[in-house]
Length: 364
Figure 1 (cartoon, rainbow, N blue to C red):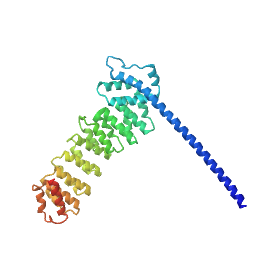
Figure 2: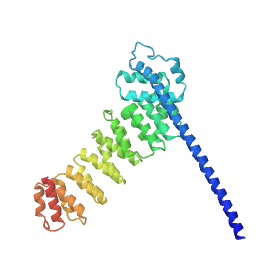
Figure 3: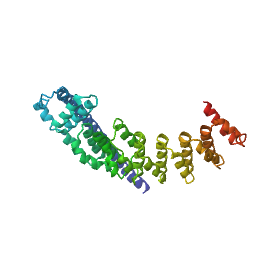
Figure 4: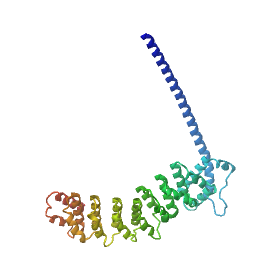
């Protein structure tokens, strides 16, 4: 009986084994077919690209040397007309035009823009704005921005508040590319935070732009969006703007530490007569990090008037604040580092180490 059961289970296992072998063979064949098909597809794409490149080079070459006396500047052959009915070719043309525009300047870039419009490629880029895929949407914005398609600005403006960070970043950069400083009007409505990297990108685009006035910056400094306030503070520093000083001082009352630290960066660059006193007035209510930042700011914008305040900080229970105050005093006190040696506990720790460090830093 046991022998019959063993034979029965052995037969079942052998059937399972054969089934698994057949399944593996089928999967292997399917994988091989897939690899062959993919390889053929890639070869076909590469072959098409080589053919497309010749056609594109022809029309781009015509566009670059187009003169105002000509009506449209390009001769679209029947072959190119047929190719332009294919979305893949049209996207390839867009990419080539963008690369060419990045590497050219002057009249040639205007001609490439004109070719982009003659071929109605802006419609292809605009369609991408409606895609559910964020990377396609972002690419469409980038294409329209590079090809200076201001006529689509309404659609792009709506995307400055898109939930996807990269989409809204592209839209924001596009507006600044179109309009310069006035393109920052999206700051009036934006709900999402502006990343530090995005702020750098926007400032780079404003490098050669001079605003007519800074009324908008005053408004942004009162925004409910903390990142907008921070960016407005950076704009104020970037443009050395004195007109917004009062609004900046009001930001010292903001509960956000990042906002207040950016206020200090502005005040280091654009101090006024009452700045040091304003900082000391806020000092006692702040945390350690901000207190250290205030003392560091006083080192750059302070005067002998703040010496009495700093002397009190030498008795603070926190050694870091003691050290920061001592460094600041070495800059502001008429006697410099020599004053530190007159301190009653100059030969005791932590003062001995603190004063030695300051002396070495000043010597370097």
